[in-house]
Amino acid sequence: MTTLENLQWHQRFNEHMGCTKGCLDYLGVDISFAWLYGGTGNAFVLNMNDTVFVDAAQAWDISMLFDLAPNLGYSVEQLSIPHKVALEMPDDVFLEKQREAFNFVRARVDQGLPCYAWELNPIPAYFVINGYNDAGYTYSGWGGGGECPWDKLGAFDVKQIAVNCVHPADPRTDGEAVRAMLTVVGDRIERPDGWSIGPKYRTGLPAYEMWAKALELGNANRDGSAYITQVWLEAREMAVAFLDEALERLPSGCLASLRSAHDHYAVVRDRLHALAELHPEQSEGRDWATRVISPAGAQLVRKAADAEARGVGALKKVLASLT
Image (tube, rainbow, N blue to C red; front, side):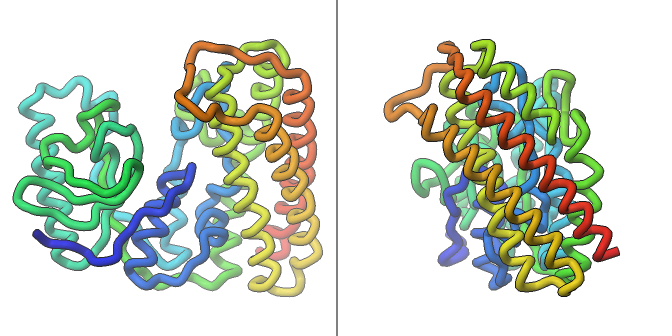
């Protein structure tokens, strides 16, 4: 057995961020969760569908996570077979791709490089790979650590292969990293298709109104809504923390705009926190059929949207001062 000692997953609603942070900790790349979420733009994403179903948490274009990573001091090498492609593959071809993934991971682990991957047990989620043996992978993640046969990777629930290897890199300056992120986020956050991967989703500021209407009209999935609220609350908590950190790290010329953005995103965070308290996650099991009607929840979402629109305006001023 080959093991990367002390490589552990961090529990986060954004599993890419939790896995990446574990990999960066192992590599000795010093980066806070706030700077990681903010610098990759993940702190400012919003994705929604008209039933507030749980898939909106992950069914969005995550490419900027990898595109912006080198600015922060790491890069991500990917081996990917998307779900739609995997579904059409004959079993023997998919098995060969699983073998390719296993060889990929073994080679990287032998170089001391950490990896994370989709579905190493029946929970549809990402897990950190902290080693391997002759039979398959060892991992850290939801359900605790364990082992996964190499020919079970990505074949439990949502059939796909997504293996990512995290490499250290030379970071850009703080100002360059934030400018690159705001350029990408600013191009997407006001568009309904900014991070969308399909017509049923809305992203950025337009997603808030889709969310509010679903709650107002009683079309929102009860448990999906509770979960989604926690996902985007975590993101906005990280947005506020990122802006706090940016106030310490960026030039004085943009501090006034940063403070303004910070204060507006703090309102967004607080409104989503109030929504999470209004409709908390169920303590036992989840029901993906029951709907919830909540005019009060819709009002909180719209207040969050108004504050975020003001925050976006402040972020544009930050970008202008860094250009």
